[in-house]
Image (tube, rainbow, N blue to C red; front, side):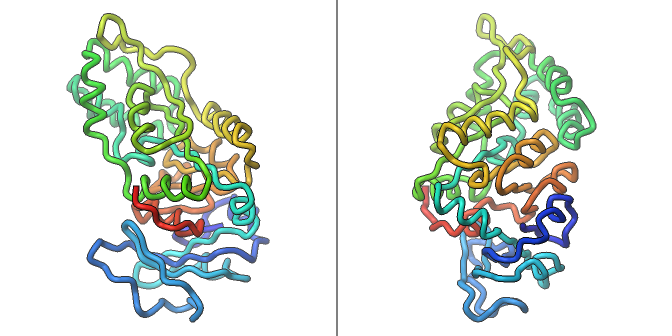
Amino acid sequence: MAQDRPYESSRAETQSHLSAGTMLVYRAATPATSPDAVAPSGVPQAAEVVSGVGFTGWRWDAEEALLLAAQETEDGWNAAFLPATVRTAITEHAPLLVFDVDSTLIRQEVIELLAAHAGREAEVAAVTEAAMRGELDFAQSLHHRVEALAGLSVEVIDAVVDRVVFSDGALELVSAVRAAGGAACAVSGGFEQVLEPLAAQAGLWRYRANVLEIDGGVLTGRVSGDVVDRQAKRESLKQWAKERGVPLEAVVALGDGANDIDMLDTAGFAVAFCAKPALREHADLCLDVPSLDVVRALLGLSLNHP
């Protein structure tokens, strides 16, 4: 179990019996930051110095790490803990990562980038924020937001793809998992037409998202088929784990909003990335340092530059 702050989750409480696993103490860093020569208090001498995209820290195998993980850390240090049961499952089966996309795998919200072309970005952003806080039904909010895109040329999709930026450490995490024999997937409440080229660029094994309806080269303001909501995300995770022959204990799910709750509840290890309060209580790791490469270090994977 792991978090950046004192325990605040029901999931944490149900796993409080865990005592052995991998401990990581870390903090944000810039490319110019050197790995720390002096460890913060509580780090054993045998701990390994680790660093990566946007962070530096110390990692070690721990028999009793929960007390440290549950305390405020000094000078910007954060504590994360990977239970030995999850570590063993990942080692035996190779990890399966399942990402949310918007504000997780990538920095932006795609629907807001699309809405900017219609001059309605602020309106759509407000609805997105409320939906991710769990205040609105996701499917209803999606239909409302997609209506704002009606009449846009299909060419805006390529323009949006060109603007998308992957989150810090995302490509490094995917590359490391693939090098270890695992796979990475993405399931999104966003749109397949944008996710498809991003999945190819990142090297994802599977992906799923809503499909924007297009008629005569123009967005209709509707989506085709069923909406990818929180239940669909959970079912996608379970289906991909079954296809890979991987137990759920070896699945790591990463998300940022209320639409990711069921997916995180189903995974063996749940990461809330710079997340909304509605999701944090469902996470094993609340990662507020904005680099997904921290997850790679916690899983004990080598840094492979994509």
